[in-house]
Length: 178
Ligand SMILES: CC(C)(COP(=O)(O)OP(=O)(O)OC[C@H]1O[C@@H](n2cnc3c(N)ncnc32)[C@H](O)[C@@H]1OP(=O)(O)O)[C@@H](O)C(=O)NCCC(=O)NCCS
Image (tube, rainbow, N blue to C red; front, side, top):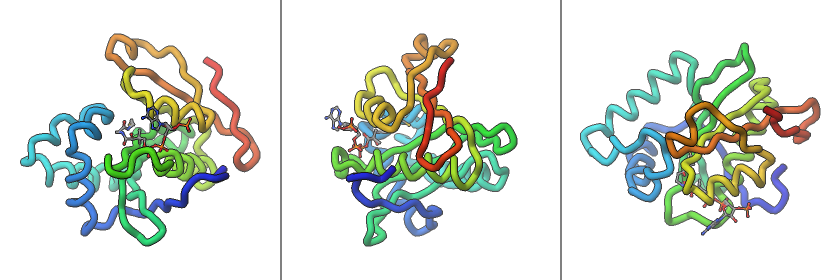
């Protein structure tokens, strides 16, 4: 699944990385692509964001990863939200610091996240939401085999919803058929 994509690795966010990563995420152009992140523009919510990540991880409903270059430099984050291992479902979220956009890191990160969810966690179906104007995100998802599906109220919220369903073999994914 990696093909010619640049190498990135996913690792548990280290406390020392988080302030830097949240600083990158507060870039309005990055935050614009992340549903519900507008509150991060208020620097007072910064610690709260980190606390919320930790809490959700402890409850098992989310898994967060730093996206790192081969030298270990963190360049973004990705996550499994609404994680339901029993039902085999999760929603993905991802962002890359703007200075690194357009180098294939986003696609590599989501590819690694998909592989980890399908191969390691036994997830059968992943969902992703993108704002209607988020061309990069939509292209990224389409190029990894995600298919857009109608979803109740998504268009009214200005959102597009994409699905990817796991098949049996490694890297052998079929697209979602609503
Ligand atoms: C969406 C995001 C993660 C993409 O990261 P990235 O590292 O720039 O992505 P890539 O370089 O892997 O490129 C992804 C796709 O966008 C395309 N792309 C790159 N630059 C583009 C541009 N200026 N306009 C349109 N598409 C572009 C790439 O060609 C690629 O598509 P392809 O695989 O069909 O060639 C990044 O823009 C981001 O963090 N945005 C803010 C947060 C966000 O929107 N998250 C997604 C919703 S949770």
